[in-house]
Image 1 (cartoon, rainbow, N blue to C red):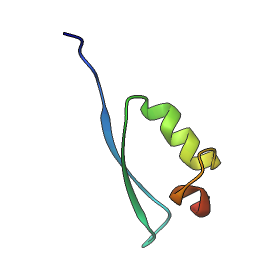
Image 2 (image 1 turned 120 degrees about the vertical axis):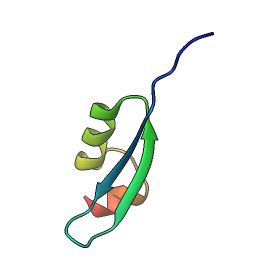
Image 3 (image 1 turned 90 degrees about the horizontal axis):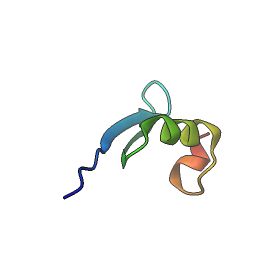
Length: 47
């Protein structure tokens, strides 16, 4: 059996802004993707 490590994370678009909740196995990469708008979808519009 292989162990998997996942993170549940929450990001906000700003004070009193939209709250985004996600799951990833590479937290540093995922936060970078959110900040840079690299992945199309909901958060790309917030960047």
